[in-house]
Length: 137
Image 1 (tube, rainbow, N blue to C red):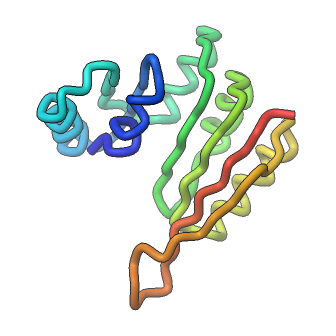
Image 2 (image 1 turned 90 degrees about the horizontal axis):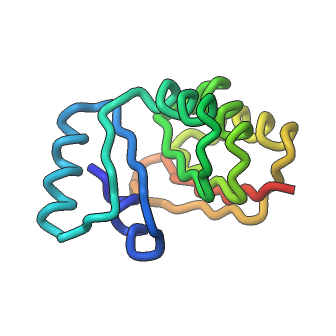
């Protein structure tokens, strides 16, 4: 519903938010309007296809925040991130096993982990959220 991008919009010139779920995409547009946030553009698209297009067009991206499903990211998405060469990538994960798998690709491609934190957002369950900040070497 656009919460991460809208929260960060006050620190950025422009924010691009991509959501595959149509209802979440429409809710994000509504949330931005209600909160008078004008520097976030929302796209209803598959994130992998969207970022592949950005990489193909050699867009300039300073920071990528990714929050994939529990199954993790796709290799195509990760390699497109690498091709875009942002200074930082923030990976929000609810699946420690897929996070570890995906981080290996970033680490092999000129990124290092500068910070990682775990958050217990689902009390009384065995699920945790992990936020990892990757920086380009």
